[in-house]
Length: 179
Image 1 (cartoon, rainbow, N blue to C red):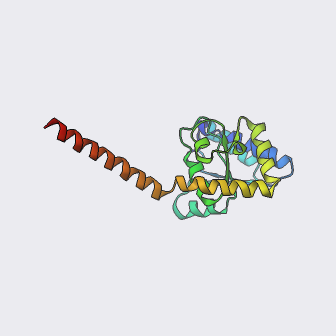
Image 2 (cartoon, helix red, strand yellow):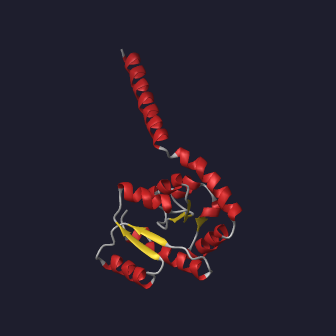
Image 3 (spheres, one colour):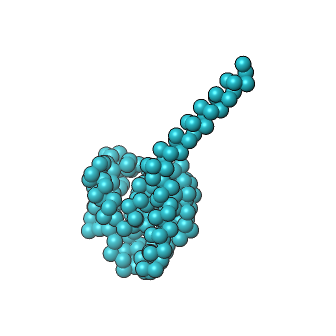
């Protein structure tokens, strides 16, 4: 995706830096081109300062993107009030546990207060709580497996077909009553 101010990548970095300071040696993979604008330069600086645990993947798609996603057990989405949160919907089917702000579309994707946060400190607390408990991880994975099915390509196609069919049926009935 895009590395842009509304994505609030700096919040992901701050959150995970706090998690690391609490003893969890996690890494962050940033996927997307970091532009040469003011925001991009600030993210680039944060990446350099934390180069021992931040991996800049650049713009990725296809097989490379699938490979990166398949290697991640956890994800973090920091775009506040995102309408949908496609990155969350992309990570959940891979089996990743994904944390996201407690507003906007991603809350509908994972539907779990344990994965929703208000601020950097809240996010770090919730991530650490999950990292500390294999039982929580197992329960969240089971919960998210059910949610992933709701966002599968098959469900999307079937739902789209049903909407088109209903629309055509409605138009046909309206045509009959006006004759």
